[in-house]
Image 1 (cartoon, helix red, strand yellow):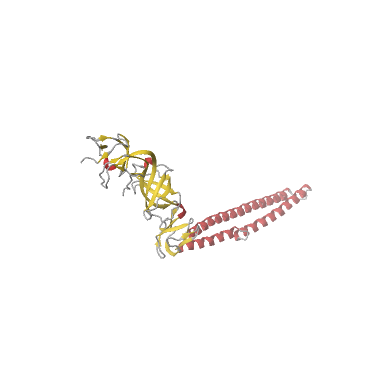
Image 2: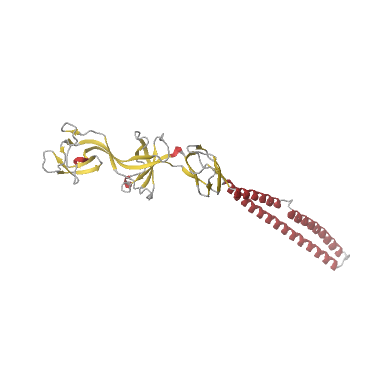
Length: 367
């Protein structure tokens, strides 16, 4: 439904009646007084810091630890969803991670075997090197043939190549084990996170303003469980008509009256004007923050507001009923109606810019 928005004028004066009596059609004189020009807006209480507690996994609600009106603390567990698959995957992922970590250690069978083979090959290489050096000395003394020396050199080269190959094999095994450990660690963290989604925790301190689900309800990912709001951030969310939004500015004072406490008027200040037209309410949305926090802070409470857009001192005013549709008035003693220039109009009063003075006497309009 389109919100009803209008101009209103706060007037604090009494009209001076020329004739006595209680007849509303009596003659009157215009009066001078100060007025405040406002834009009327409907709206409701809301919380700036408000969020929906939503399910991050699928399953039945096995626990729900909140009621509407309860205060909650950051990271407090508010509900638990039973999801056996997430729990099982988390346990399996942790077991796989333990295996991957063991395969990366020095006691892992593959690494242990490769390390032993490398140590043996290095020992053989050291022995073959000694043998080669001894043959070189013997060859200088003509104690061994060139063929014997070449065989010793070939044996040493084969041992060196074998050591190099075994080192590369051991490094490859360690690299593969490390890659497997990284993969399993990531998988374990993912599954642990998924399992943690079974517990729904408060994202901040606040109050439960609405609980949607009950224990035993089946929920899917994204379903709303409850709405949490910080009662310390209660604001007035106002609906302003498109014909009036251009007059509303951040910082303007707002007079707010809650529907539940109509005898109390609270002061607030415009803090934000949304840049997009709201199709649902067919209005522009503004936020107003209370100068003194409202004692009544139930979210959704309906309200009426007057946004102060201007003030005028010493304005000449007449009753609205004494002004015709063509902006003329009937001055006492004159046969013809007199045209006047008007400014602000409310449902009861009209600002006169020119055409009459405070000394003129107005009579009711001729039928």
